[in-house]
Length: 113
Image (cartoon, rainbow, N blue to C red; front, side, top):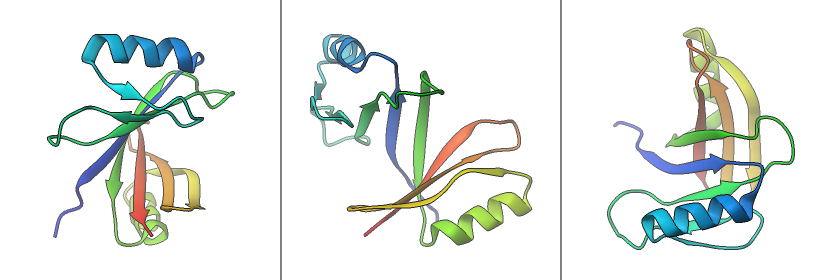
């Protein structure tokens, strides 16, 4: 079974300004909370969020791949030449991690609770 892309994330320095841009550009509703959950208004596609981490990197876009085991997937990624950037982090809704692929692109992994 394949692993679907299930989420996206847009990083920025100014969350309010970036949220306003995407709301006006695409008609998205963006939660004012710290992670700025995006509701695209469509059942097609995936949902995402806007984040201002407060540190580098400020500008980024990531997509998240849903996997059965985040730690094991990171081991596989590393065996193929990738690099763990953020090891598994449990949050209330699941566990995520970030890795760099062989070209340095950052990709997220996700396992829901």
